[in-house]
Length: 360
Image 1 (cartoon, rainbow, N blue to C red):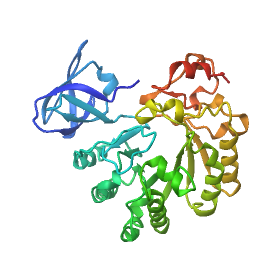
Image 2 (image 1 turned 60 degrees about the vertical axis):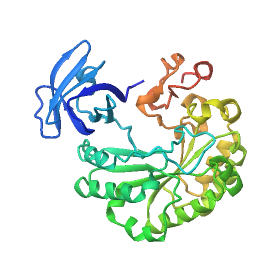
Image 3 (image 1 turned 135 degrees about the vertical axis):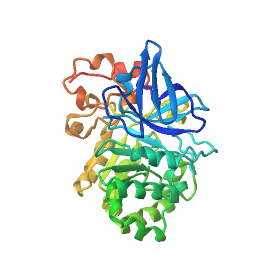
């Protein structure tokens, strides 16, 4: 697994953003240049002084954009060079308590929007930057302001924001129609067409009604939307009905992503009761996909290893798991479709992964 947080010491007192450059690369004021490297790690110098990172090589982190927190003794690789899987965790607060939440919410919030903005302005050309939480739109003004300022200077960038979509209101329509939001897509979860079931899964009464209002605002603004549904024992039988709801009410979305469960956070303790082995019974998922695509709703499968999906739907299974948390079973080694496959989450039960693989 790729490490995103590294032990570091720095001369500075306050957190700062820096891009790492190896020797021989022209460095600007936002860059740190390599000073020394040995078996213990690397040392860089910048306008903030010296910074030492333990346990990495300069080749491993060259070009990465870091938030360095001297007081905490760490450096976070928030934008890694040439990675397609960079995501900003802008808050750990959330207004929901989803049964399977992979990032259990915390009450505290540390405002780092200014640092994130500075980092985004240094991103590689044409980067796609993810934004996640918690619930990012709890800080809607800060989030929108950050993206607008970044896109004004860097129109080559794109953002993908994971949000429950419940904090948009009529006053946001005109703002979201700004051309800069053509570079922003919103990943919004929906778990059932029936309000009671959706609300129970997300642990919040009235969530479905608020979601419908938020989706209406985004639709009026012409926003780009990726709909997301995690497959659970609670909702798998209801997926075909949800597909009909999507086709009837939400056909304006760009894509519907049906996602397999991640064994982390709240789902880890509830794995036995929540996980659905789609390889044993793909029928409700397949029916949902067919119902949606029949009406022109583009549909894709996330976190489904390709060999576990029946051939008729296999091409919809995307290599969706981020590189820093993806692994393949040993049995995957000879597979011809490995590069196009999601593989497994690093924390997926090992025995389950090995037993479920049939190389293609």
